[in-house]
Length: 289
Image (cartoon, rainbow, N blue to C red; front, side, top):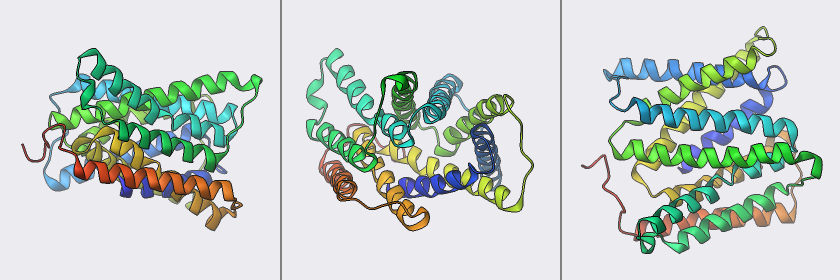
């Protein structure tokens, strides 16, 4: 998950640079296309197969993930970027609520480690400090889209976990999500125009796809073998990486509040890791079963 967070942050740098040349739909389309081609080539080289026995599970994961992505782009168009990102990072809060609610419904609430829930909440507090979001009354439609995006992201992450538990390999999960991104990105791009490519622009699109695909493979593996709330906490490290890249590459200002948020983010990630290592696994490791 730490490697995935780092690569996703690098991808964010590429997306920010590519946004000056391409629309959001185009970036989603090419991200998915490069990912699908990347995975297909990898599977062919390793002699694997993209055939799955769980098409409905992949469909559910792709729909949730793609809807979250589309809603997130809409929220970015309607809200300040910091606000949209913060609302999207509420996926971890939604995940905690889903897990706690499910445990209560089946009468096994004692299996939820409340310290992990606290780590998730602490990490979200760090996100809020780093991004310092603002919201006005006119921005509620975008805010609602951002909230739903976070909820859909949480559903997608839990579905990734379920796919891992049944033994579905990471590359197959990422491949079908990439196909969904191609469809959604093409639909968005068709509302405008596809731009002609330049060597720098094409390089950014390819880098975005490769980084996103590699990061998704690592993330999928993390959710397949790890505990969902631990992974949710470690994901917040992506904000810290993005903050550092923003300072080094884009000259973003460094504030005491933002630094305090980074401390909370890292503390939440380390706490989650410590609890993960000490805890008894809550499900069999699919790689060992």
